[in-house]
Amino acid sequence: MNAMSNIIDNKNLFHNNRVREGGTSSDDNIRQELAAHFVSDSSEPLHSDLYEQIDQLEAIDMDELVKLLADDGDETTATSVSLPDFFEGLAQLATVGVVEVTDIVEAIHREVILRPLGRFNKNHLSNWPRGITGRIYGTIRRIMLMVGNNLAAVLRTYKHFSTQKSVQPLPDSLKKLVNVLNGVMGDHLVNDRNPLAIPMRLYTKDGSPPKTILSGRVAILCHGLCMSHLSWQAQEDSNLGEAIQLSQPDTTILYLDYNTGRRISRSGRKFSQLLQVLVDDNPNISQIDLVGHSMGGLVSRSALFYGEQDHLDWVKRVGNLITLGSPHHGAVLERIGNHVQEIIAKLPFASSLAKLGDMRSAGIIDLRHGSIRDADWKALEGRSVLPQDFRHPTGLPSGIKTYFAASTLVETHYDSKMTDLLGDGLVSVASALGEDDMEHALFVPDGRKAVFYGVSHMSLIHSKRVQEQVVAWLLDNGQRDYTGEDRIYSYPRSLEIAV
Image (tube, helix red, strand yellow):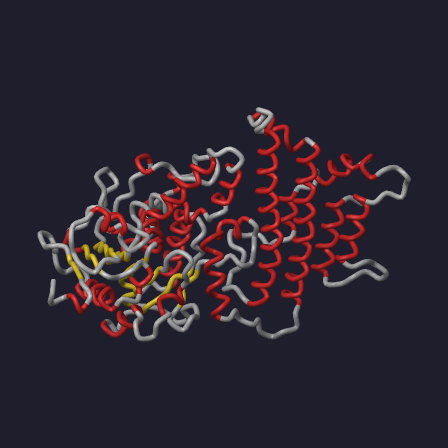
C-alpha cells in the first residue's frame, strides 16, 4: 500500500468515526508508512534504494491530499473562528511554518553551493530538485505535510464528532492573535484551507450577525489591516459606532469582519456580494453608508467598483463613502519594505533571505500602491502588483458623496514635504486624501477633505475629533455642496487657541 492510499484510508476512517477490529490507529499508520520508506529488512545499505523511495514520495499529489482532508469552498469556515478551530489551525500552521523555513534554508544552501562555482543560473536551479540535496529537502517537506495534515484531520474529526452541545467561542485575547495572523498571512491560510482564516461577515455591536429584518438607513464600519469588527469598540468611551447611533437613532450600525491578508480586490468582490445579499434579504433598506478605516476604505472602494461593474442593486442605495487614513495611492512602509527586499535579493548569498518578504500576505502587498482591482495583479507571476504608474485607474462612483480623512503625527500646521510624507506614521497625507498628479487622482472637493493633526494611524478610529467630523458628514448626508469651501483642519484641543 503506497503513501497516498494510506492517507485516503485514514481520512475515510476518521469520517466514519470508527476503527476496524484489529486495525491500527492513524499514528500507527504514519509510523508504519515512514518505516516502510526508510527501514529495510535486507542487509543492503539504506542508501541503495533511497532515491527510489524518494521518487515514490514525490509522486504524492499534495494538492489532492489537501483537498481530501479539507472541506470545499472559498473560505474555510462559514462561522467565526471557534476554540477547536484555533487549535486545529495552529496544528496545521506549525507544519506549514516548518515547510516554509525549510524552503528558505534550502534556498540559502543552494546559493552557497552553486554561486561560488558560477552555476547559480536558471539551468542549474531547475536541475537542483533532481540532485541529492534537493531530493532530501523535498522529502522533508512531504513528510512534514503528511504528518501535519493527518494531525489536523484528527483534530477536525474530534471537532465534528464531539458530544459537546455548544462549541466554545474564542476568547477576545486569542481573537486579536487570529486577526494579526490573518493580516500577516491571511491568503496563505485560505490557500491551505486553515480554519484560522476569518470568513467575511457582518456583525451588530454585540458581536452577533443581524437577526432582525433591517429597514431605513444602515451604516457599515469596515476595519483595517490586522484588525476586526471588535476594534471599533476597543475603547468604551470612544466608540464611533455609538457616536453615530446617538446622533442618528434610526440608523442601524453594522460592523464588517474580513480576512485582511487576502487580495483587496477579492475582499471587495466578496463584500459586494455580501451587500447584495443584505439588500435582497432586507428590501426595505433605504440607504447604505460605508465608513472604512485604512484598508477598509480600499475594500469599500473595491466593492463599489465591482458592484457598479456588475450592475448590482445595492450600489444605488449607497449615500456616503467615508475613508479614514486609507492609502488610496499606497502606504509608505510597504513601499520601503519592498525596496529593502529588492536590495537584499541582489546581494550574493543573502538573496535567499528575500523569501522572508514573500511570506507577507497579498493584502499587505496590495497596500504598496493601493491596488483594488484584479487587473493590478492577476497577469503577474508571483505575488506582486503592477508598478504605481501602470496600475489601472479606479475612479469614484457617480452619485455617491465621498469624504476623505487624513491625519499626521505632528500637532501643528506648517508646510513640509517630510510632514506630508510621514503622515500618520503609515500613510501619507496626499495618499489618504486621494491626491495624485496622474490619472489616478480621486477628485473630491476640498470641503469634503479633513486633516487631523496630532493623530496616529491607529488612533483615527478612536479620536473624538475624527468621530465628530464623521458624525457631521453623515448628518449632513450630502445636502451641502462643499464646492469652493476650504479643506478642514483639526488640531488638538490645547493648540486650537494658539493656532
